[in-house]
Amino acid sequence: MAGRIPEEILQTIRDRTSLVDLVSNYVNLKQTGRNHSGLCPFHDEKTPSFSVSDERGFFKCFGCGVGGNAFTFLMRIERIDFPEAVEQLAQRAGIALPERVEAGPVAKKRDTLVDLHESAERFYRKAWESPRGEAAREYLAGRGVSEETVEAFGIGFAPAGGNELTRWFGQQKVSRRAAVESGLLAERDGRVYDRFRGRIMFPIRDRRGRVIAFGGRALGDDQPKYLNSPETPIFTKGDGVYGVSEARKSIRDAGRVVLVEGYMDAVMLVQAGIPYTVATLGTALTTQQLRLVRGVGGEQVQVFFFFDGDTAGQKAALRAFGICAEAGVWGRPAFLPDGMDPDDYVREHGVEATLALLEKAPELLDFYFDETVPAGAALPERTRAAKEVKRVLARVSDQVQFDLLARRAAQRLGVSEMVFGRDERSPSVAAQSSSEAPPPELDVEWPVAEKMLLEAVALDANVARWVIEAEVVDKFVHAGLAAATSRLADAWDSGESLSGAVDDLPEEIANHLSGVLLASDDEEGPDPMRVAEDCVARICKRFESARRRLLVAELRRAERDGDVDSEKEVLRSLEEMKRREGDRL
Image 1 (cartoon, helix red, strand yellow):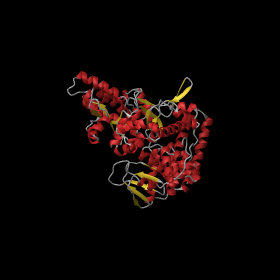
Image 2 (cartoon, one colour):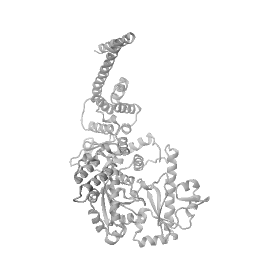
Image 3 (cartoon, rainbow, N blue to C red):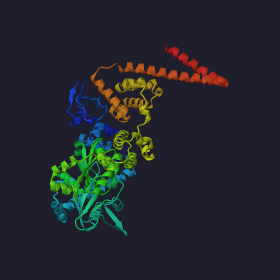
Image 4 (cartoon, rainbow, N blue to C red):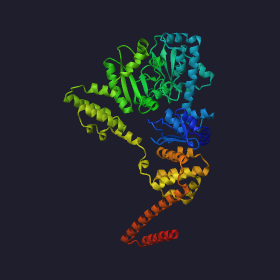
């Protein structure tokens, strides 16, 4: 599925989805009047402030302010994107989605590459189960990998022949160009051959579970021992981690993730009972990888790293601190005995000892300052450390995290927090922060009459029609509220679902309206039409007053400049305005 999803499909999904049933999978709900309520899953609370309306298709937490519909809820609770939420709700509702939805050439190419990788996964699995895969099966069994783990990760085998996958693709009429572009086949001197040969194959999936690349381990002495897919339009080594799809639910539930280097490390830790383990893809740690696991686990997810206990491991941990700071992740380094990797450690010492090692891991922040600013450090050392810390903090774009880190650094170094001032950050980070800021329009205080009129339009179709006829939206001073009022009025007029219209609004406005609609179910409020009439009168009066001030200013300018024609025109406008006001009285 790619491209924009037609509104009629989204509406069918909304109609067939019980929001109460969906939310009940995550929240213990009790009926309260026409709605259901429970403890909010998005923040800690002891008194229920989370409300769900099946009738209107909205949820709202009156504690933290989060609100929305079925799509919004699933995206937040599962930390997935909109297309994935659509896919899951469509499957839940028994609705078949089209394979291609207005897909452009780029989207079609990406879908083709994913299809090729998933076809290759099936081929490697068949080869694993065939007599050709016996040596691979014996190798992993000797390493202690169970058949269940092999199945869970989809581990397969690439035969050593060199053209087995090539023939497989040929039988399926796959174009030579697409197969080579996927990275699964390679080309040399006009000859096409399998890139992976005689290797145990580890499928690399994105967070949605789609196969986008492979890692292959040689069975014999072939070099390199591990070979990854080349970078393609669907795969960038520094952006992904191995096992993220398999570990996603465990990461979310535990609020933690263990990040290791190798495929076997991840496989063995998961099998041993640490299911929130993932691995880098043979690259140095990147901010993109950490942002990926933060997106899965949430803002407060703790990331544990395994490092060697030697000097090189400590230096790697120090480098990791800067990357964590830039990614907005709080890390904890666990140091292994010399010569051991996580796979060795868990097999030799067991899962309890491994978990104990993780629990003893310090905060990476504390480790960094302990190493950078040792106790009793002299002034020259503290000065050098302050410059280094300032360089690292310049990579932090999140204001709250920057303030926390700067405060801790100032305390440890004995300097003022102003040393690390935001105004001296690198231009690239400053630009990034400003580009990620919300549109300034939504920070403007909402005019009361416009806000109340929007609420009345959301509550009543007759109000919506009357507001459009009154042509009052053009007199709004808040562009966001004006656009939202027009959008809801159009939805009422066309018979479109109000929930669908709210989907299109800025998050701040959508959250507010969710609360208004839910509150209207539980309590008898004022008549929406009377509210609308009062608001329209106030908005029009404000508009006319502003227009009168402009005309008076224009009249003074015309008098000052001796512009007789303009003076007469302005006077006529003022007289007409006065006449209209008299008619209304």
